[in-house]
Amino acid sequence: MRPSAEVISIKKIDGRPLRDEPAFAMWERGKRDVAIDLSSADGEMQGRALIASADVVILGLKPASNDRFELDFASLLLGTPRLVVTSLTGFGLDGPFRDVPVYDAAMQARGDV
Image (cartoon, rainbow, N blue to C red; front, side, top):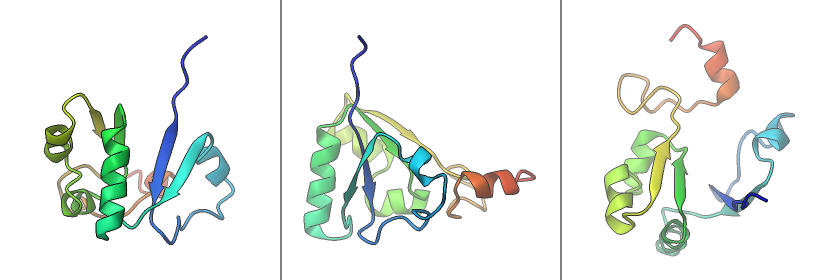
């Protein structure tokens, strides 16, 4: 039997804007949601504790938000060198669309970019 992974999805306190989308249940299947305000001292501490206990971190924020919360690759690896870190961005880590918020259906609609 393969070992299972616990997947924790950190959300903003006000939740996800796509929660009412029909595909949301598929996108979030098997994940545990945790609502944290990363901009507060307590929220930052909670987020850092979750990251410190993780084996893998997948960043889904806009690159500017990763920078603001010090969730860039270098900062994460400095605190936890064994961590595997990857990032999912709509338009990459640099360029003119770097910080445009996006999700899969919007990416498919913008297939020309």
